[in-house]
Image (cartoon, one colour):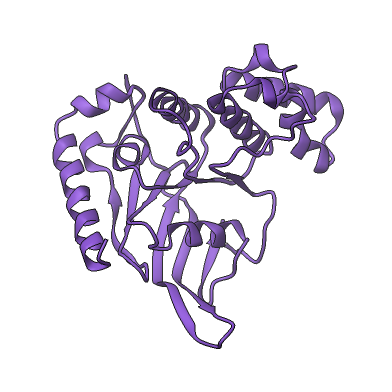
Length: 271
């Protein structure tokens, strides 16, 4: 099943000539990324892809406000990002639920911190637990859940806070293959049904091609943008079922192209 992707022309996120330099204790410096520029439209699923050590996660952390660019700037909805805030929700690879809270209370947690009234929290939590298919587990504790279910809790909690953009750092990297593609299909349906904007880091080419509306490909260290463009083989559609994406004309060519980019950069860094 595929749906037309009517991209909104409003720009949600802009990364403009961003660089990040780290200084060691001995005073020497190292560039993590250099002159990185790209933009993300509203309701776009943007994937940051590239070889290990190219600075993808550094960029994501700067968008989150967890790190500050050494050069350049990053803007969300036209405002410069100067630190973390609730307008950017983060989903990490490691499970981040509070073990002492039920699934429902975990989803409500951020809203409670933001002063949302109890009745409204309950309604919003119920809505997003339904979206991630965890309604019947709302009274369970994280220790009683599988890895995929724990990530669904994290996604529901993030969505419940109504962020302007969701940032995901290898969110499915620790999952087994079957759970991983189930989660990928779930994310495809979520972005279609919630008008959410996502920026995700992954090393997985197949995952990038299935989920991404746009792929920003980074060179090897120090990272800079090598290619930036829409995922053409989907012809401006979002595909909801993994095997249907694999069968689309142009998929194999797109995969080969990115594999060639990845291989060239690994050779550059001797990997």
